[in-house]
Image 1 (cartoon, rainbow, N blue to C red):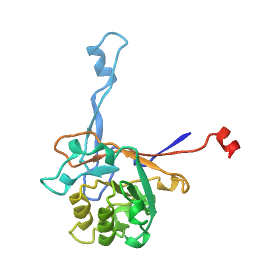
Image 2: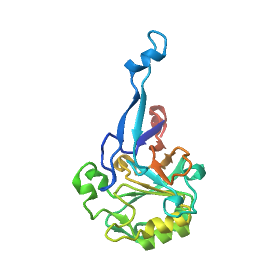
Image 3: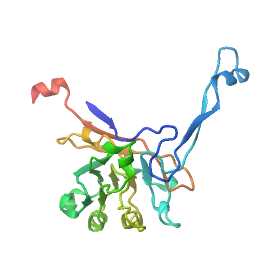
Image 4: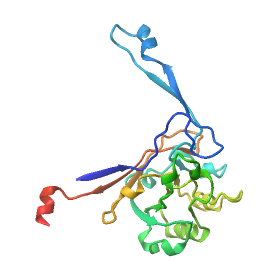
Length: 228
């Protein structure tokens, strides 16, 4: 029996994702009532409209988010974001190499950093500073190990106390996509192999975009449990 958990935040009108970035404006291009003049009696449609910055909600970064000559969403290798076996790492503060599994357990894996910071989502505390982030030595270790993807459930995978972003720089230079603002990581099981899928649309010219991140794993059926 395949189990699924949504690891993404909902996108709502005027919500704050990152302090200083505008929230999305969600409305309609064509409402049900107005559409009636375009179709046969009894036929009506709603066509929505959304205006937002690319870094809204739970989103994925590709190299062109950081480097002008990097590749973007339309060139994202699907094997890095579709049904990728994941390693879930529990961590807090400045995340170092001591919490990472051995390099051989990280090859071609999605590394999901579970810090618990998503509990602050929607409140001032979320973006007020002090969020957990990946350390530079740990980022370098993930690059050397050849991970497929790195995600975190906090404001930023980098510390934001200064103006540099060394973690974005190192991971994206290596072609490793980053997902920020994950949630519901507490629902992932400790004793199952979890796979992660995070597919953004192939928008030409963009380096970041919201993603619906889904974790999945197999649980034995009731009949299978009886035979175990």
